[in-house]
Length: 233
Image 1 (spheres, helix red, strand yellow):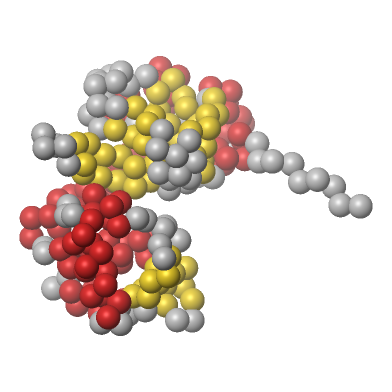
Image 2 (image 1 turned 120 degrees about the vertical axis):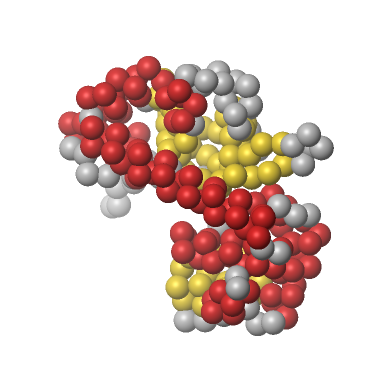
């Protein structure tokens, strides 16, 4: 008779957070005691601009977008986080209010740690501090790359760049191309590349007709990656 499979524990999830790669089991258990697990429903905000930065978050399941809204009400997405990512740490470390909004794109599972506890942990675990510095640096480079896209590239090039990056981060190589696991809506893509949903839909249609991608609803496969690279100039 098969035994029922136990659901993953908080410790199991923490072991899959990239920030904690390489730390010992004892250090992991220490972190587990300081965190709490939270279920977050799709479209539920975790924080909004101006909120106090009381927690640091680890994303264990689902996706979270980091965004803001300009004076005209247009939403701009700075990052789309996947399971294993840490977020909300910059303002928490500085002790300043939130500058952006964090919202669950899907039903998500997160771990939250109070700011003071996170600061104490970093003070006694230099290896984690070094890893956090690397993660922050990588995130800043991604944002810089997105800003350069907005300034120097047209919409087809920006959208091609987004698809290439999605293929690198979570694409699955198959016989006929690179299947993107992230099933973004056209509006989510538009918020990431700084244009309208209608423009994204039209451009993706062009990519499909040119044999660059294959679409099946929200599922997408890159079938000519080199062709997308050429669009980047």
